[in-house]
Length: 333
Image (cartoon, rainbow, N blue to C red; front, side, top):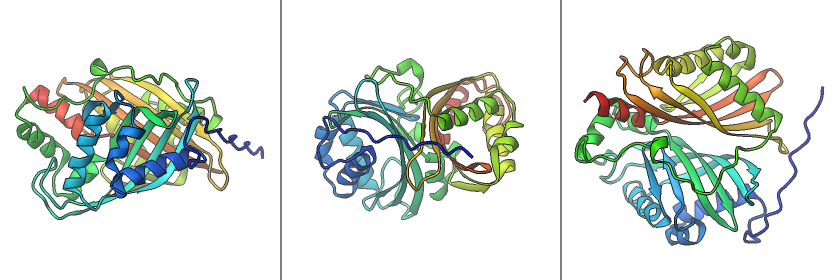
């Protein structure tokens, strides 16, 4: 059996010497900002005009990020962000792109963007793709498992999206979900690396999105652990088939694009991959999002995968179900 070589370490040129590698930087500044309450450090660590794209919105500039951070901490004052993995690659522009996965815990203590305080203790995942150089993050793509969050509070994602539209002032005034039409160039234009594990996982997703669902039993370990949107943990190829088929069936004519892929080999870890992808097109099929509405929908997705001797052994997939429903409801009323 051929063993892949470990990915060589990166020289952290231009970064504070206390950060010995990209995971240390990403996890370190995340803890400083969110848990140590050094929110003002965002002026130091985030570029003044950086874009943060999430399925629910596009934020421009660190002052808007600071405002959003304070609002989140006011609503969830005990929030923690536990780093599960950081899959990264050097960038041609200098610095690196990291796709880091977090497990967040929080208590819905006060009223805010999620409505009246429920006192609910939450556990959910986040994946953020961050481009950094010179000790500063300058471009970002971020997905929270909003479906998992609202389900734990007693909502279903469709009802939450409808209520959110009302609370934000109605269809004419509400915050518009992110789509490529409103995107901006933040300065990172890389596509990742050419590592075989990244290529392998991107090919699996491309096969699925081309309706070759037979790729799943070929590629997935029979005991694969799946961490899926909505806070769902499932196991095995049949569960993977159910999730991916339900998503693709909702948007059968939508364009599937892989925007970024990274593969890595690191000590004491399985070969891993991070892929950022999207589906853009009409809601024109029966699937996980109900009756076809004809709505134009953009689905932002980020997935992580770990491979073992019998195939894909762990998969972490994030999309924002509430942002998808919001786009559908804005079309249908």
